[in-house]
Length: 272
Image (tube, rainbow, N blue to C red; front, side, top):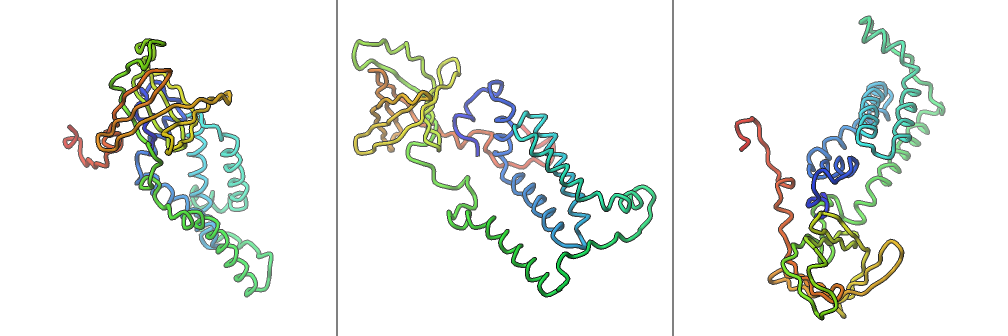
């Protein structure tokens, strides 16, 4: 699921990379469906009788990923190309059979791949152990964290989006209008993000001291500053004492934005 600061960033200011992954993150159905297709390709490759089918399915998946990486400037182009060439290398022994089947309509059976281990019992045992280890490595992190759907996981304290409603000086040191803040976001990875009236974002990593009601902010130059805060869960009012000004903001219901609505329209007539 996209973070609140992404949802309130103007469309044109997002990079293609961020835009692509944020769009995918709004659809759990698509993420699960494509994941099942990829897992199916892997399962088909494990079995000898369905290996060619699995390799062909995987080749289509990898080529699509390469197109996505180049089309949206995602920075794993070299790795995805490596996967395509690895897949082609695995398909190469079956090229003649595939050409005969798809081009000439001939149904000749490909030669079976010889087993490295001739002992059938040992061969099956090693394969079973290998598949078991792969499944453990894949599933253990989810079982350990009990996180099988990250969208439903509890977010950290103060997480969300806040609309700035008022700024007034605590002293006469700095006029409140000079801050020019529009929104404040608390990112799940402990980032405090300010959005100004021109939609520019400034972020700081932070730690919370709930006893002293303080946020310890750190910028990218490792400079630290302490900001006092107040939060009233009853009215969702969030206050920050920033540069000797009190910034008053109210939590927005960002989960209710249209991008996060799970609606299904089967015809054009249903769209309003």
